[in-house]
Picture 1 (tube, helix red, strand yellow):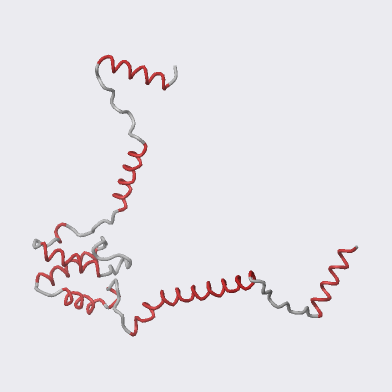
Picture 2: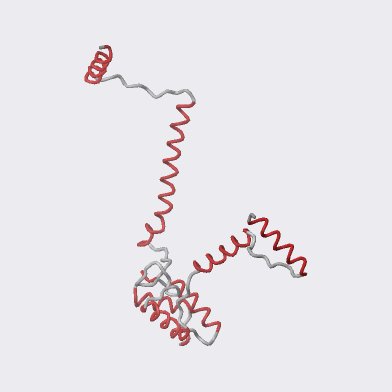
Length: 187
């Protein structure tokens, strides 16, 4: 008896008894959806803020979270202090919350941390003469790529349009090499 036939027979027995057979396997689309949701949950960024760091005032906590997203973890260097679990990031989160609780504005807190740790602590550096190259590099690279593509497409277009590139005459050494190869081929 095949697997399918056995399944049908079991269905019939359940129908006779008046009991509905529970679905053994979820439809493939449902399994795919559940897998996608699980994968998204596993890749969701983990917030490293410890429960003891959270401020009781929700508006101050929201401001602290916003400021923490603007500051770079000096240990991880590519994460905000809000996302980093490094000890120094925790100290910076506490410092930000202390300054906010003391009544500092968001700009004053950022200025205080920047004065203490340098401009590198900012995830988005300000546009200034010394950071101009940092801000313009992506534009320069994009412009260079556009120029290279334009030159390449013009070259291809001119070849397709029937304009053949000018052939340079062979030098005496090249001519001698060609003659030698032709002689070898005739032998």
